[in-house]
Length: 115
Length: 107
Image (cartoon, rainbow over all chains, first blue to last red):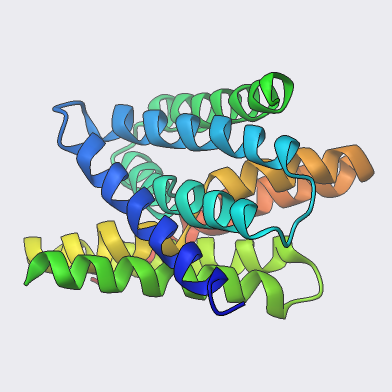
């Protein structure tokens, strides 16, 4: 336990720094969000399938830590709320669909390719 | 200094999300709570300084909220009970966007 907590927190920090670094790549906010959320969902699919034990320290550090830190929901929700407020209903619906479709396909794909 | 604060709030967000999922009877309820709460708080932060948005928003609330765990829970719920998977997915988006909208309004 004493080693698990720092490992999960370090993973969360690493994922968050990774998300920030990707946000500096020059893409739009929406593209950045799709990239980090899809990538994180893919990796989480691999982690969950490769390590079935929920309490395994490696699974916690990579799943709760890295993937949880890399992906975000708050940014997506604010993006959608801003679009809806601006009357961009179609764009908001498209962003919702793209996030879910890419996230689900990535997660299921990660589970399939896991060792 | 900003880097230190970034690391500290990202770690705090991760810890809070992890513990939230463990303290409720169903993990998805904890994920739902941090995602909706984080969406509201990020809306509130929209008028804050760039440094506050980086430390509080990108690091803290970005780490507090998650999309990967949400997707994993959707898939796992769907394998047990399709109805609850749909309810969970729709509720997360409806309440999350409404919370973000409210936060933006109050900011």
